[in-house]
Image 1 (cartoon, rainbow, N blue to C red):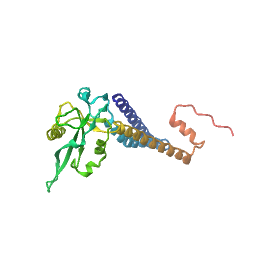
Image 2: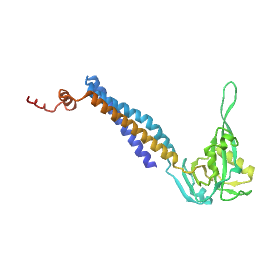
Image 3: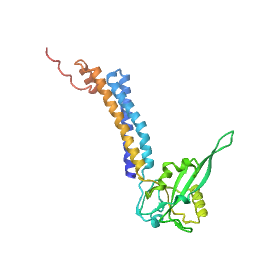
Image 4: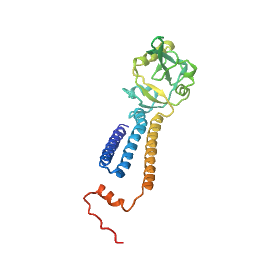
Amino acid sequence: ATSVHVNWLAGCAMMMVFFASCFCFAGFQAVSGKYELARPLMAAAMMMFLSCILGGHFFVVWSKSAASQVIKDVPLTGVAKASKDYQKNALFYLKDGSVSTAQMAEYKLCKDKLPVVGTCVYNYYCVAPILGGEYEKGAQVYAWAGVMSHVACNDPMFVKSPAREAWNHDYRNGLGIPRSRYWDDAIDASTKKFGLKTGDNAPLMTWVKDPTHDEKTAWHMGWLVEFIVFSAYLIAMLIYSYCVGFSEEALPEARKIMDPYAPLKPSRRK
């Protein structure tokens, strides 16, 4: 995905250069009084700018979802070693394991304090161990599933959320979450409450069916927006050409604009 990121950034740079060139050239033609040529070029520049804004949103989402690190076909007992120093959104494909939802724990963080009333806005770091079999006291946990929520982890809204519902399925796939001290506090709460053992290198992940879903959706939506914008521009230019028309008197003027040093074509005999 890293090489794809570089290619995408290079493509964006080329689009912006093309946009700037069209805009500047159209502005020069408009100042020179050559409005027939300036209008479609100015429209092309504005459509390019619009596509960069709309499509760029989805490409930014895609770039945040895409990951170059893949931990594939690894048994649960070896995932910590295989995923050492894993990146955010690293793709995990496990051979075994399931989320033990009964051993869930949370850490509550006061993220923001509302003025006047002094009430906290909390973030809840919800974690549950990924086990290779049934829960046993003193079991070693090699990986964790985590979800950051804005409601308590035992709240019915969280329990019914798609991220929490995924814990009920043996997907054995995940997206890496970098461990922070808040996640570590939630993991410590689970290990102390249920008598579990774990290591600092045990990876934390978002438990999902398809780790590449968000990446593929954002990529396709970005290109769909680009296609719609440029299709609209093409249709608009076709309508513009039909309405303005091309007369025999307009051709010499167009030739002067496009190539001022070209020899004039002799007039047709009548």
